[in-house]
Amino acid sequence: MGKYVISKTVNDKIRFDLLASNGEIILSSQVYQARKGALKGIRSVTKNAPIAPVADLTAKDPVHVGNPKFEIKKAKNGEVYFDLVAANGQVIGVSETYTSMDNCKNGIKSVKKNSGSPVETKK
Image (tube, rainbow, N blue to C red; front, side):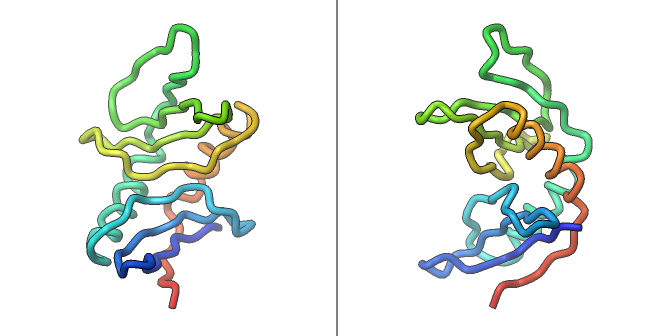
């Protein structure tokens, strides 16, 4: 099983990463003012990721789906990545970039699988 890791940024803000069981970061959050905000974001991932369909925005004719959802996008370097979008339309977290669509889709599967993981605070 994976885990959420809450940590401080260089300017004393808070963020979280969702790690797969192999220790790789599969989703990174926005920056929050306080730990309470990060915990709310984690609850949102836990609630939304398992039920979120995938919208491939890189497709020639993308099929748009309602929120919550995973949105697959193309990065400036040509690689693909995904956002997890909550029911309210806010981006909860962002993936790394992937060199292939298959790897990106595997990343989404991993977020869905690990979304109920425990929370750890990095010292």
